[in-house]
Image (cartoon, rainbow, N blue to C red):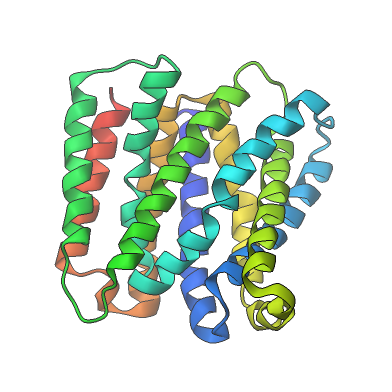
Length: 287
């Protein structure tokens, strides 16, 4: 198995662990999703920065900083609050599965903007992914919130844009994934705290105290997962890395959330939807 695929799998499992932790943290802390996201990403930035220093990699040049800062503003900066809100609204499994549509969006964007190849299997994989996402969107239940679906799909779009932009910026650069990850997360943390300040004003400290320490483990997982994903994108094409990472994430999240939160996280419809999206991702990958 190629290094890019191994890194993508590990990253996907870390993301799944993070999603499970976020649901647990929201339930325990009763904190705002936006503040919880800001706390988690801030911890992630510190973790990634520490790992970047420990890696011994050279400091990035100034012309690299602004590029990965843009990635950070896109995701998780502009999307993490929506991501956490979606987990709270529709649960870890459904959020993860809907975000599983992002590899197809990534591939379509990569075909358009990065001149990656286009094949019939990409069209078929896209169709299966759309059907799988539709099954979640059409699911009925008293605890099911359609606003959470919109949050998850919006997050999926930002993740797809992030993957393509990161892949584009990674080409031709020798910056280590640990440093690029640190830059992305620091910028994302700043972006999120700006949103928090605009929404809560002077009361943000109360919300932050609610979010601590429950969101700290989430930050640790993000601080490991994102640099690994960026390194995978540095070593492999978007059409390989994105579906592999999301496949690992979805399989892990159904197992973890089903274990921690019960059978409502792995209903028959959820499992079928996950299978369709995974199959779609595989078809896109082999293209």
